[in-house]
Length: 366
Ligand code: MRU
Image (cartoon, rainbow, N blue to C red; front, side, top):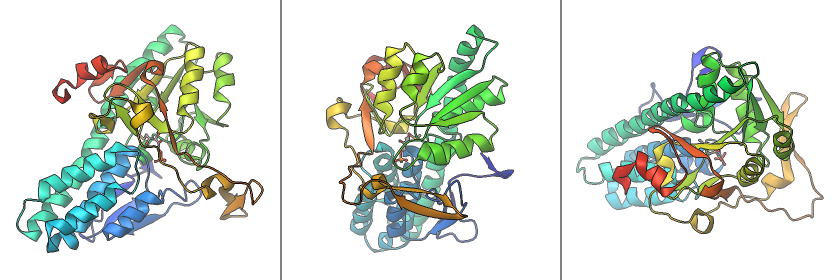
């Protein structure tokens, strides 16, 4: 996608330094646009943990580049060192399955290569390939999701399609296009009038900061709302469709996504509003059956709840919200059971959120 008319991705191999990887620092957006350079696996782990980069497909791509950076140092020593780095990378964030998927894919491809140089070359090539694949998967998700939006528009041609989304499942989270946002961009580019309700998404406000920034840069009409507004809007006919992303989806259809997604799915069901989840196949957990009991839910630093970051007099500042001695808890994700999900939008098409539905699109996985 474009930033100030320049094609941009949230991660890329540094063209001027073959031992470095560049990322957009998402902690500072939308108020400051800054690019950071990663040169070591520890810097990569820090970037994932501290959410310099975030969003499931991007965490995966970053993990893949982390393995490449490891081949430059520990990988030259022994495969055991590389393995240790890969384990540390995979532990950086627990919920998004894309991270382990991408790290394992690069590690498996290079672990048997004898020559350090060959490992470096292959890890760099594969990290770039994974990154490109995720971008292409999201482009296809956009095409399949477009038909859902087009069908809704056909039923009410005189009015914009109102879509609600949670968190940021946009190009910043996914290399390009986004997952939840890809159908929105595709519809907008096809001339279908849409308007997006953007949940602010406390505590880190990925909706208010990142989704609103992305949609605005692309000229998509949107309105930022509080996380608790969605139910009211749905009751009053102001939402036609909900589309979210996901960090891990079981092969049976349970969906882990940013905390608060489950409540939106409940409200959508109560109001008869379709609730779709958009994801590339890298976000499916092909081994996990029960998402509610088994998906690991990240618990982050309570300071992210007690403090809010914003712009004040031209500076990015962080302010304290509750009484300084009130304990806070920061559950970062929740799980929406398959029964509340209307369908999945994937790079292979749209399917029911069920084992049979997923098997229909990805038979080779079963
Ligand atoms: O904590 P984050 O910002 O990494 O969480 C991101 C989300 O919850 C996204 O909705 C999810 O990764 C899907 S991105 C395509």
